Amino acid sequence: MKKISTDKAPAAIGPYSQGIVANGFLFASGQIPINPATGEIEGADITTQAELVMKNVGEILKAADTAYENVVKTTCFLADMADFAAFNAVYEKYFTGKPARSCVAVKKLPKDVLCEVEVIAAV
Image (cartoon, rainbow, N blue to C red; front, side):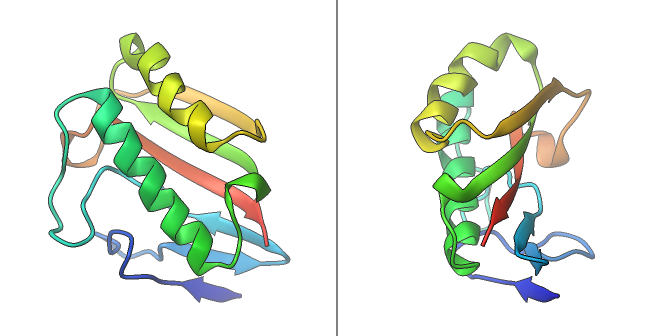
């Protein structure tokens, strides 16, 4: 197993890694809309937050020498299912390969953000 770490994505805010590569796959921890340069949440709406989440996911993919096209599964968490359409409008710009996906609304996300995305990708 190989731990993935990059300063171009938010540092882990708990006892976990940004990602782990094992058996030819990257298992990336969920990403929220934290600006890695400042450590602060950015964006007050789902579109702005989702864009930053996707960029953070992209940096972890890069650090593992893979890309959005190699993502085989995503799990998406929304604070409000009313944001589903706006979230999808951002999501589809990045995950053009249409990986398998779960998308659920949850009671609360870390730091009260509006969305979180985790991925599994072939490396």
